Length: 526
Ligand code: 5AD
Ligand code: SF4
Image (cartoon, rainbow, N blue to C red; front, side, top):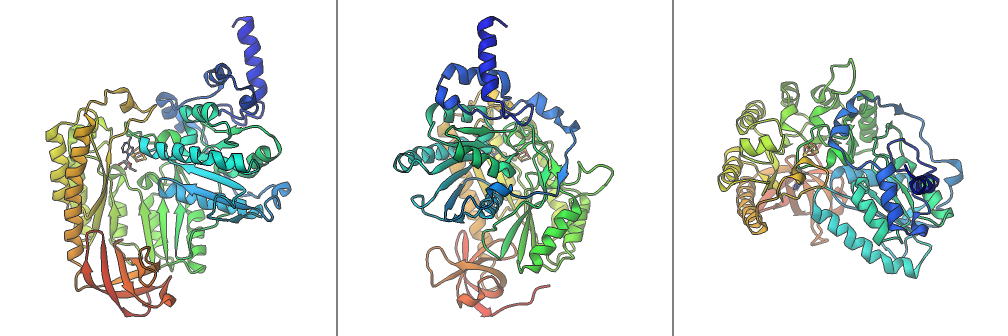
């Protein structure tokens, strides 16, 4: 290291003095003021660790601590009195639930929520990195926030969630959007009060992103959206490393919550009157693998949760590779365990699945589906599919279409492959022209729509149980809710049944929803 480099290093250390984790990028206070691209670049080269497959795979050996003693720091308890917050959430249910935790933390600090950006004293963007278009949306929104900051310099603007875990994103915000006040990642949400304090009382951009995943923090406050359905994290992170996916880098290694903590949370929700819980994880079938000496998996957990007096229990997202016989045996017991399984397949071609590192073949997937259908003849299956993966041939795409039909998926989330920096697939040539990708997506969507519409027709004349969520988005005189198999039902009924499970006779079937008439007010469900 020469004298010049040494001098710069000491400057960089100074700005990162509050770095809390050795491998995190810590706090970049004052970089904004210094405004030097060179310095920012040097900072990243020296202390920030971008997603790194090799290092990420070694992470399993590290211990995860569970903390039960969380509380908002005393000096931040009343900081939000008379003030308002707004959190915009992008992406998956995990993000939605993280937003509920951040809302809980802010509420504990005295803030109230608002939907109006003009009224807000804090605006947080809880971001998603799964595909490029998700990121573009967020950058668009960041641009829209600039005039707001000019008008009201007191408003605190924050970017958090999966995008914050990416080196290139943090870099871009530092360089192009210096009016942002804080950036924090997915592993340090619980530090929101401290970070907010730094952002409020210092004048500089606060950046704290830990590359190494944090511990499990129990008892974080939550403000849940609605009082009917609730999300419950059962595990964090993902160790599957599908070659296209950024999640193992942005969400860290698999960490399971202890069964007793999950069960207690579900019991508590049941006692509060919630009618449905969805157990959440990026790869829920890996639940328990990291719980040493326990020999306890998702099937065991579901077997205990099914005994809790709550009408509906769902779980998402499943990975076919870890979907074991014990889980199928437990799901087949029914009761509050619903017979809808979301089982992402991604492709119908064994060769594409191999390069995606999904670790199952088309045949193995079909075998699993058969097992599920034998044990649960009424099960509804839905899936996720990616088209236009590098080197995907027309024949391989045809295999996806034929699998879609063979399984009889009732619905599917379909995506065009999007290269994600830092993942193995992003290093391969993205050699399918966009026109072709779009064409494949269109053909696939046509089939998905057809199969969904056909599945909906089956419900005509049937009476189904609907958990009523509220007024329909399109018509406030109509109520909307979901069946056990997750079909959207619209029907006329009294507002008093919102939050209840009612019986609805299906009159009309559309492609994505059903119309019906309520036949009974409320049904006791055990
Ligand atoms: N490009 C396109 N789709 C992706 N998904 C995950 N990563 C990518 C990517 N890079 C899809 C998968 C996954 C769903 C949540 O998002 O289908 O199951
Ligand atoms: Fe991503 Fe799901 Fe694969 Fe994990 S299992 S790497 S979250 S697609």
